[in-house]
Length: 235
Length: 108
Image (cartoon, rainbow over all chains, first blue to last red; front, side, top):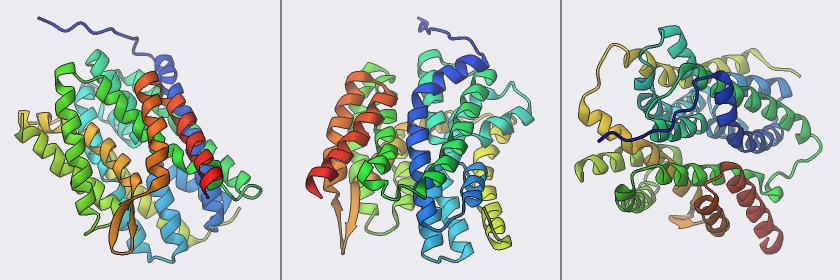
């Protein structure tokens, strides 16, 4: 028996439309980042370049933290690498759906892959079992431009409103991760949900233990490798 | 609106190490068929990474112990409920941010 999937058009416009729900997250985190970055003594130009070139929320926050603490260049680059290495796993998940497109377009899809666009793409895969290139470009470019603008505007606001934490804006990132987790749980097969919940419990324990031995970002990476392996082994 | 050569080099370095892991799978998957076990393993990655990031935000180092951060824990409850009920990203983020702001307002 074949599963019935609802198909939405593979258009740039549909990509923009599917990106809209994530934009509030990008805007609030981007603004928060801009504000935080100004307090770390980054100039507006540097905030703009960082969001344009690195384009990864958590890595950008960590960059500011390390830069402010006077960490050496090698440490900042290595940490950025480790924090963003999860993109490798996400790209591996999404890339098989784009094999019919040219290398150049594939570089485009990969260059703009983030936690959030990945979350949206995975939801799309669960709903339709396919991904379209135009759709992905629409999703990616909307997210990217929103992010760069939000970060830069945040930097400008930072001059006037230096207390982002009391506004709860720093929590936007965590709330977004919770929403994405629930969304990917909700779109997985009903009979698998109990198993996934158990794996999430195992994740909590694994991460907790790992945090005694390594910084959080490394723990996220290693715990993911461990728990995904447990998932395959317990099938 | 200024920057230095050192900062530009640092940014370029960070950009490169972020870009490579993002694009390499897209170039590599085209020529190589991944074995079935790898594909099954990859199915677990989204839920694993997302839950790891959620837990990582909630745990905090306190001296020699790793503890649950009270603010993050209590803000997560309404956030989680709204996520389950509405399945909406934007509503979840609004409720999450508002919960955290209220918690800080009343308990800080």
